Length: 268
Image 1 (cartoon, rainbow, N blue to C red):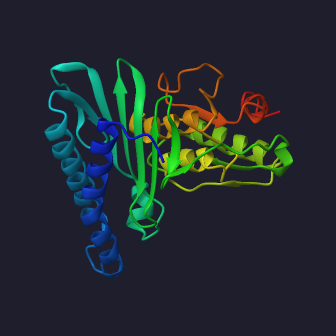
Image 2: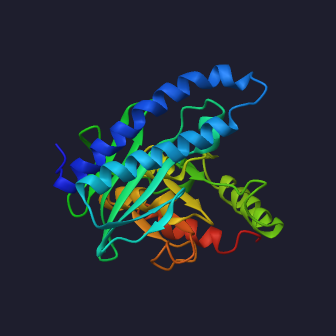
C-alpha cells in the first residue's frame, strides 16, 4: 500500500471529485463531434470548470497555499513555502477528439521541492500517486521504471510541437530528434499527454520520454512519479532542472546517457 500523507489524500479526493463531471462530459463528446458548433467551447469550459473544482477543494483543505495552473496562472497565497501545480486536463486535444488518453495532474511543491503527486486518468480509472521518499504507485501497486539497457529493445515516448506551438526551427529539431531516436529503438509513441507519458515511464510501460517546451503543470507530478520509481530526470541538455526551460528527459540510469547523447546531436 502507498504511504498517503494528509496532503496526498486531499489531492486524491480533489482529483476524483473534479473527474466526475469530466467523465460525463467525455460521454457527450460523440454527440458534440457532429454538431454545427463543435466541441471546442465545450472542452474549454470543461478545462476551466475542472481547474475551478480543484482550486476550491484544495484551497478549502489547505488555505493559504499558492497555486499555479494552466487556466488560472499563478495565484499567490500567504503561505510562500507550499504551492500546488495543476493541469486540469492534460491532453486536451485527445479529450476534444474522444481519445481516452488524458489526465488530471496535481503536484505539491514544498520550499521548491516536489513533495506529492497525483496523475489520474478518469476514463481508465488509473490513479498514479507518489510521495517524496515513499515511492510511486498505480492503484496501490508499487512502480519501478523498466530495466532494459539495450536501446534497440526500447519503446520511447515523446511530444512533437504542433501548429499552434513552436517555431519552424523547433519543429525541425523535433523531427530530427524523432528520426535519430526511432532509427535506434523499437519505436516511438506520441500520446499527447506529458503527465501520462511520464507516468508510463514510472510504470515501465515506456522506457524513456523526452519533450521540449513544456510548462511546469505539464510535468511536475510526472517527474516526481519517475523519480520515486527509480528513474533519472534531467533537462534535455543534461542539466538537472527541467523546470528551467521546460525540456525534460527521463529514463533509467543506463538508458539516460545513451538517449541524451543522441538528442544532443540529432542531425549527425
